Image 1 (spheres, one colour):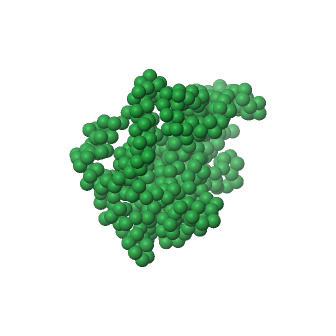
Image 2 (cartoon, rainbow, N blue to C red; image 1 turned 180 degrees about the horizontal axis):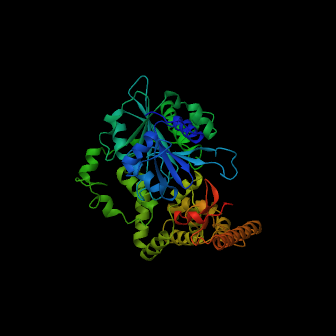
Image 3 (tube, rainbow, N blue to C red; image 1 turned 60 degrees about the horizontal axis):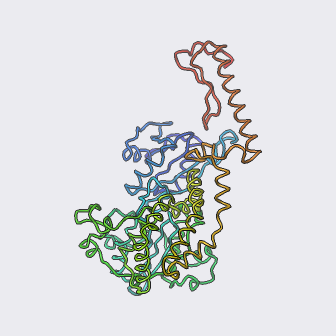
Amino acid sequence: MARPRLTPMMRQYLAIKERYPDAILFFNLGDFYETFFEDAELASRELDLVLTKRNEAPMAGVPLKKAEVYINRLLKKGYKVAICDQLQDPQEARGLVERDVVRVVTPGTVLEEDILERGLNNYIAAVLTQAQGERLGLAVADLSTGEFRATELSRDELKDELARLQPAELILPQGMDADDLLEDADRRVAQTKVEENYFKTEDLLEHFGLASLEGLGLGELAGRTAAGLLKYLKETQKGNLAHLKRPQAYSPAEQMQLDPFTQRNLELVREFGGGTQNTLFSVLNRAVTGMGERLLRRWLLAPSLDREEIESRLDLVELFYNEGLLRAEMREFLKEIHDLERLGGRLGSGRANPRDLLSLGESLEMLPRLRELMGRLRAAGPPEILEELAATLDRLSLEDLAELLKRALREDAPPTLKEGGLIREGFDQELDKLKAQEREYKKKILELELKERERTGIPSLKVGYNTVFGYYIEVTKTHAKRVPKDY
C-alpha cells in the first residue's frame, strides 16, 4: 500500500509496526486504540469497524475501555494483537509522546478472565524435532496459572498428547510442518514459527538460576524445547513472568494413554456431535471452582496409573462420602474462594486490576476457616491423607496481607487502575492530601466553566479534558459566532 506523506506520529507508528509484522498493532491515541494501513483494513473487515482516514492513511479504532472485547474476537480468529501504550503523560511530553508495545496478546498467552474459559486450561505448546532420531521435544505452559512442563516422546505419542492438551497456540522452529500433528485437535490451533536460536538451554538455565538441566530433571531435547517456549513467552509478555513455575519434567507414560479415538468413543469431554452437555465430564463435574473443574478435566483425560495415588484419591472420596455435613460445609466454603491460580497469574505478570486485588483479599480472609475445616477432616479420617495439605496451610502466614488489603482497598474499586479511586480515604495521609487537591482543582474547573458560560452567553460551553490535547473549551457550531476573540 502506498504511504502518504508521514507525520512524526505516523513515523513512530511505522517504526513500531516494523518490529511486529505478524501482529495487528493497537496504537494508543487518547482514549482509543487505533490501527492504520493494512491493519486498519483487516480490523475493519474482521471487527465490523468503520474505516476512515488520517492524513490519507486508512484508519480504524476501538475505545480503550472496550478493547478486550475486540481483542477476544481477533484471538478467536487466530490473530495476534500487539498492544502499544503511551508511556508518558502527554502533558509532560516534549514533542511526540513516547509509546511502545507493552504486550503481545496471542491465542496462547491470554490472561483476561473475560476471555478465558473457567474450566478449561489455555495451553501454549512448543515442539522441537531431533536432528537424528525419532524423538521430539514438547513443552507446554498455561500462562494464566503458571503451569510449565516438558517431555520427550515419539511422533505418535506427541499427536495423542496434543489432542489431549488441545493447545490454543503451537510454537515451532522455521521449516517444521505440524499440520499432521494437529489433525485430531478439536479447535483451531494458531501456529507460530520462530528461529532455531530460540531453542537454547542457556536462556532457560539463566532465567531460573540453574547450572544444568539436571536441576530440572530434563533431557537435552526437552530442555531446548522448554527454552524456546520460555523465550517466546518473555518476548510477548515483555519479561513479566514472575508467576511462571520451573518446567517440570513429566512422562505421558505415567498416565493412561487415551488416544483421540478412545476419547471420542467414551465421550469423556466431548460428544460425538461436538457438544459437551452429555459427556462423562458433565455427569461427574460438581466442582464449585474453576480450579476444580480444570483439575477434574485433566484427571479424566489422563487417568493416573500410580496405585498409591489412586488409593489416596479413593480414601478421600470415602472420607467425604462418610462426612456428609462436613462435605456440604466445604462446598459452601469453596464457593466463596476466587480462582487463585488465575489471580496469581495476573498478579505475577503485572496484569491484575483493582478487582483482582479485592478478590485476593477476600480469598485470603478465608484461610482461618479453611484451617478449621481441615482440622475437622483430619480428625474424621486417616490423618496421613491430608498431612501435606495441612502442613502447607500451617506454613502460610497471609493473614497480615489479607488485613492490609482490607484496610487499603475500597469495596467499590473500579475495574481498571487508570480510573483511580482504589485506595480508601484515611489509609495514607499523603494520598488523601493529593486527592483533596484534585477535588479542589475540579471545583475550580467547574467554576471556570460556569463563569465562561455567563461571560460569553453560550449555555452549552464546556471545559473538557483528554489525554491528547489536555484541557480545552468546547463550543458547539451553533454558537460559534459568540466565541470571544480572546479565545
